[in-house]
Amino acid sequence: MNKAYKFRIYPNLAQRILFGKTFGCCRFIYNKMLSEKIAYYKETEKTLNITPAKYKADFEWLKEVDSLALCNEQLNLDKAYKNFFRDKKVGFPKFKNKKNDRKSYTTNCVNNNIRIDGKFLVLPKIGKLRIKQHRNIPSGYILKSVTVSQNASGKYYASVLYEYNEDIQPEKASNVLGLDFSMSELYIDSNGEHADYPRYYRRALEKLGRMQRALSKMVKYSNNYYKQRRKIAKFHERIANQRKDFLHKHSRQITNAVSCVAIEDLNMKAMQKSLNFGKSVNDNAWGMFTSFLTYKLAEQGKQLIKVDKWFPSSKTCSVCGAKKDELLLSECVYVCDCGNVMNRDVNAAINIKNEAIRILAAD
Ligand SMILES: [Zn+2]
Image 1: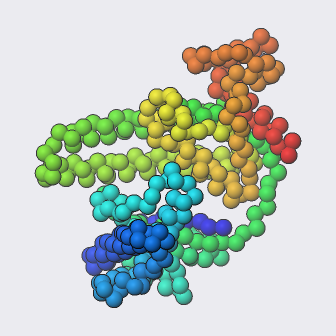
Image 2: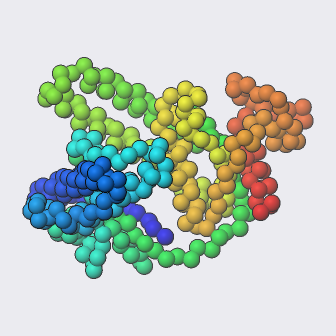
């Protein structure tokens, strides 16, 4: 199994320059290989296999940077080709652009050339640089690769990938929690707890909107314009981090508390299109949340069960099983002839839980 840890790194001036060169060389080699492949195909209708090594004679400066980073660009390009041939909808590989593409490169660990040494990370060509390691790596984890990246506000990060061998015992699903997706609060669970997706986040997005409108009125490429752009990037990063913290905290609490989680298999893309709910869905917090839940549960040998999206979780009474023909979105309380009066979302979450228990029993 693999696990990645992302740490902030603090390169000095020389290292920052070399990072910049490496990002540039990776982009260069990627585009060079892509254009030669296209030209070769036009001529022969065959696919050309090339490696970055052949360019080093013509472009001496490529030797300055980490050669494994360049090799990884070849793998990236091969992957982009494969994806395209598997599914044409993905689109043909595009040329990389200095402005739009993420500044990053990946290098691999060979013969201990990469390691974390106390407060320092050692990288090929770069040498020792300061790292803020905010969590410990369990013993037995083997360092496989590092992806260095620079974000829009100028900060540098190292995403360190480890491989580990762990025999995870599957846990018996004795304690199931159902989660009903909620537009405003992220989810409501079958015990009646609300996630309370923070309102500050919505407010922060409104502020971000105002900042972006102010930017659009500024004289392009003026000092103020760049200043505002940096401000926006910083603010953006802050709210993204807050959201991530919130989602990590909640998925961790749930994972530790129960042995199985049941959710509806919602197709977020379709939802975003058919219902115009705005920001609270568009930020895709639910997608991120379920991916955090998935791996956290898997690490502990616990299960995530996805209930079919056509399962009538809202219309069914969670006490007697009766099913209503219609339930308006405006009806916040579920009222049944059997005497059940319940919050609509809690009723749905209990149904999702019961459906998961039924699926588990049928297995
Ligand atoms: Zn009922």
